Length: 169
Length: 202
Image (tube, rainbow over all chains, first blue to last red; front, side, top):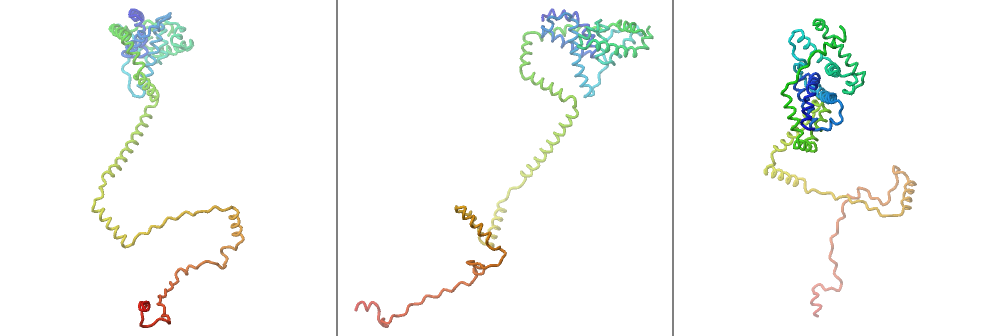
């Protein structure tokens, strides 16, 4: 793949990939490593993008697979070596108002507490605007599974954020 | 709390921006790895031993990760067994090495004792090896005949006369005294004061 194509892909999709990976890994350095790995893979195997209709969905799928591999490795390492994770990186922009800032921090913390498969579906639905069908296709899961994961995850977030949400309304 | 409102509230939260300095780093690294030299290097590594080693290590880690404590304990037990084995082997080897050799004086004294013992006991008689019995081939009918005779003869416990069998005491009877040989008597024609030479001269 030409360097110009790589740069174009980066400029168009890197921000979305970054947010998605950061939401999954909750770690900035890991996110950077995964992004690096993804673009190295694209540079070494340009045929991967041949015939791809939706570049964003394709790149998100690659990123999701890399993140799942990392989470499995990291989960095993943390489980057996008793290495506690550091403070999770914030996934939202800083807010000027205190209520908004508190809500974003609480939302970031609540997202970190739900399972990663539910978190992936919620992120793709809320902040990427994908349909359940697209999400199911991207993650390789049935449509109903994607919908139920979204529903379960959203219920947990609502339960957790109810006091703050009622307050800022 | 309305579900749609809550979802819209979540959607309104702006996501964090990616650091701008990552762009150059990520793209330059991707460009370096995609250059022909690096590509050939990656291909060469993929076909040589590091790839094999990495694959092996990956498979080993996948195999050992589920129960690392158990594997570590097993490895520790093996190390202890190996250590004990090496320690005992070294001790026996050291003991054999530290054993002092037999001095010439002790060896000579031992030889002297052996010589005295042989003088007291006498020369040792080496028993002749027992010769294997030679079985002459004979017709099977004779063997069968002997078997029939043995079956028809009286039992060994029955008292009977033993013909041609010497008693054990016969070996110890006194040996007969040899008679001394005596000179033959003179013939009647022989003169008392004559000799055989004179008679022949006459």
